[in-house]
Image: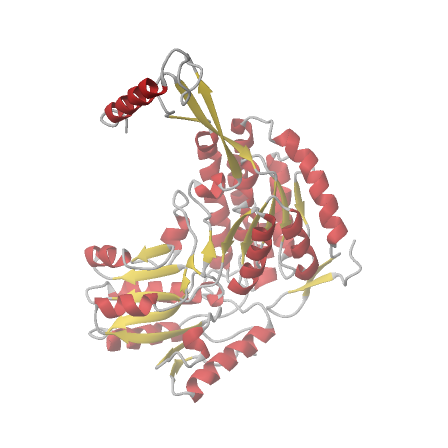
Length: 497
């Protein structure tokens, strides 16, 4: 084990020690990869139908153990009960999806060869080997397990580094995966310090998946590029919500509150800026601010709590810095903007501002906290320009008349767009891909790609009846062969698509 200090996990709610774990080091990572490769070779030979049962079983185990899992998630993150349950749902739905679709997605696919009958061409899929996962603290169950499941079903081994703030959630999920039937040695959960374990995973994996900041994603992407291994990353966002005339105002307000303050805003797809049409701006502002003021902030397992805490006291200091910077430069604080020390060291009031400019931290950087701002828009074109005026492109939500919202969605530079919803519909659509445009990510989770990205494609083509497609028969002249092939190709254009 590592000579580095042990990992001591503190609850952000009250600072109490949740648990202490030994930190793994580079040698542990290398040994885990060696063991996983041995197990993976046998696992890849198991029929897909049998491997897919892992997903179906995991669906049930996660739901059956939801209370215990939610308790651990809340202890390590400080999020409210509804936020913890959201993670349980995500893992269950994703596990079920790949449990039922993997066999079809991984089945050899017959494709057309150069000439019908003469050629038989099949595309096969094989696991990449051992996949490295580096998971964040904000959704310690979802991002530690939901993508690991399809990687395992695809026939791979897995080395997972959970964030050092939330390792117990990942370890609890790994216990359920073992119960679901994955063989010993195939999955290794290695809590450790990022500078050592994360780098070792990136240097040894056959495919790398990361969820976290754009800055770290770039570093890991460079390492994956240097090694020429596949890489998927879901990174930072500066996500807009657009509110249009004709929307269901009550629904828009509820949606904005959830989109901005779920998990205390510590979610890459959270809405950090709400663009409201000038014709309804005053009404929306008045009602939204009143709604935010009514939010119940606190800790515990009560489902009546609307928002929990931030992940650490230093994040409270960061929120104060961001809000103070905005107000000092002319922004208007509409509600919140202060810590809630009576609740605990990591609690911050849900905060709403207006009058934000690009010169303010809030106007230019991802906040990753319970701070959102309102901004007027004059028209649809103005909404498009302001929504897309960012280097990020992860998620957009639009509240308005359906036809208008669907049309507007086509202009959004983002990987997901929610219509009359903040983020949950797109996130829960596991049949569809999810990921970021621009500097918000590379690759996709969910959908077919969420499984097939963990495989390599192999094309197998058989030549039948003739010696070679591109070589003339011995008794033909070159011109005869070329003329015949040319006429055949021109004719085939009308029949082969």
